[in-house]
Length: 82
Image 1: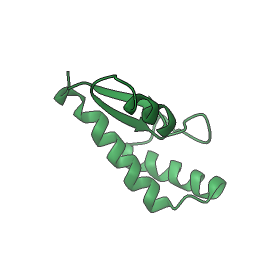
Image 2: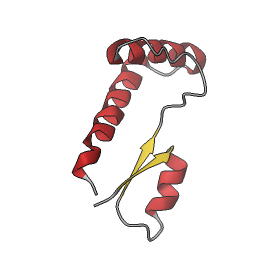
Image 3: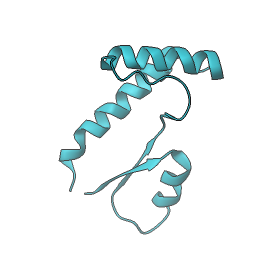
Image 4: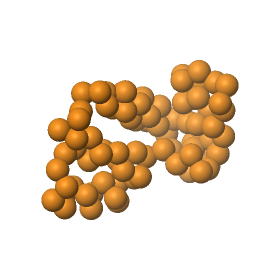
């Protein structure tokens, strides 16, 4: 099976409805907005992003951190796919 990583839910949903075979996974991190500290470890990076997204958009920090970790785990599983 092929893993397709899409820029957000909208493109993933369109691909899911197409004849493109494989798993369609939406990537939901908008790195165009807010800090993305290159020197931070993964846990600190998620904390900084969660804080920014909470302040800017009212996103619950714990929910962001959980979803972000799940995305990272999915991305790390790419070797399970073709």
